[in-house]
Picture (tube, rainbow, N blue to C red):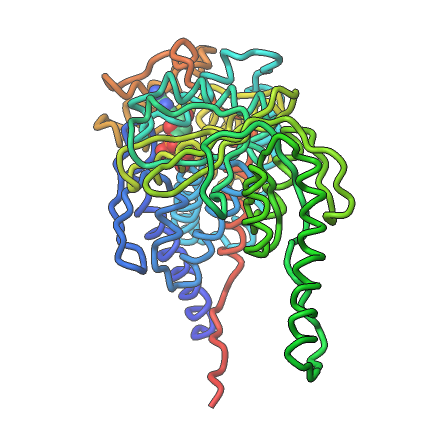
Length: 501
Ligand code: ADP
Ligand code: MG
């Protein structure tokens, strides 16, 4: 019996240790003064990043407990784009605090129940009391973007980047609809919002650099390949006729294109286009772009309101749109714009090297994501871990109402929440304990906007500084961290799969 008991706790202790190790790895990156990590990926490439999700993705975690923490970071990233480091640190601290409760004789089930109760209370308080309304306020969106960017490579151009992100999300409606294209070379300040679509393709045959009419075709212009494997014997003459007939049909189809584009232009085709057809069209001042992904065709159609023709027979008219060809780093791109009203937004990012550009892209993803969360849910909280500290204060006040041993777990949950402001302060080189005590003091006095002063230590009014983040981000971080903690605590044994001989 004793043996079974010790085996049980062993699995839990190992899982907790592994999870804590993973969480320790990302801890120093949290907050505006967080450090970066240099990593080598599988292919030996160097990655310099401050992004929790990226670090965890590249880490070679083999322990199941550690893997669960990596998964929770992925979930947070996919739901909220940002807040991955906070989620992982919070989960690590919840687990660490549960270890102390084990030692005091609490059963894992009691801890889980207490944590579950605490999560519900904390989230309710977050939504009802901490969250602020962000109805139609562009300044709030800008502040939210700035908060997500602080401490990242992007910070050097924070004004431009925040403005770009808000404009892009406002135009496109949400972060998913904003396309991001990056070109090495130039500086971050040269980045801009392009109100059109950029196709990563070139004309089949060389042509002019700009055209004013386009046509979209959702098929190919090639001789149909026979699907059946039939062998036919032909004499030389019939073979010539056979080949010529194929060519003639194609050219007659191509004539539809020429009729639709009398002054020349560009035809975007989803599939392959026969070289003869390309040559024939070029003679008529029509450029062919072939193998264009269907998603690009759809985007071009949304921008220019051009119809996407399913076959060349259906072609009726072309549409007005400006197509410009530009070369970046030896690759040609087509920039398509129109005067029609549309929601497409493409962010063109510039940066010196591909390493910095990758980190810039990750920063943009976070910023676009948080802006779209605030735009969608219309609420935000003051950042710097204040929301976590306020939830902690609320839990401590109400833990006694629950009673019994679960109360101890609720208090442990409250203590764990404070790890966020504490770590932000610690990473800035200040004493975390002083910061936490000062924050508790301010909260008690009803000052709800004082959080870590990363410049000078102690606390400062972060609402004045515009440190804002989406309510959803904090809510999801607490939910995910608590959920993964509960599942790790419930595991009492790790069973390996039997090796197949
Ligand atoms: P995450 O991956 O969790 O988003 P970050 O490294 O981006 O981690 O850090 C985010 C935390 O830093 C948030 O809690 C945010 O409110 C806080 N923060 C951002 N700017 C400031 C600031 N100027 N002062 C204090 N805290 C800040
Ligand atoms: Mg962040």
